[in-house]
Length: 159
Image 1 (cartoon, one colour):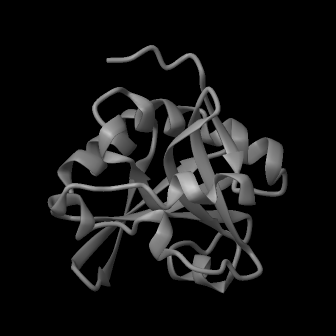
Image 2 (cartoon, rainbow, N blue to C red):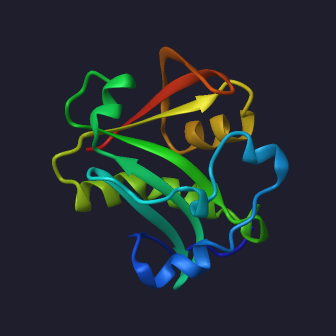
Image 3 (cartoon, rainbow, N blue to C red):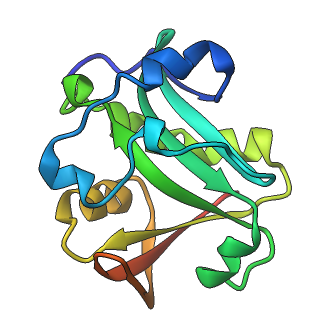
């Protein structure tokens, strides 16, 4: 486990696109998420977020404030997290856990109107389920069918 004190979250900027385009994932993870380079133009209400170790991007995810959120939560103040990935060369260092641990604070700062983060995780993606549970997400009991099977809907209150 690396020292994760230097982990921060930052909204995507053009300066990091080349770094993000170098991301790779093991095949067993690719079925559950998207690489940053596969996420083309962001539309209004979509925000790319980088997990940085000092100034180096080690992870990436999207936050959505679009109508898509309604598929996961009836809370009009919820924001949706999708496409979390950690570059393969940086995995197993605690970066995803630290990034998700500081997520609520980041959301409170950048999206002060939000009071809940929701996500869907594939029922077969046990490592991701454990990660989200370990940082405070709870299973809402809701289920959704995704392209790769059943998804568990999880939520984290932003206080």
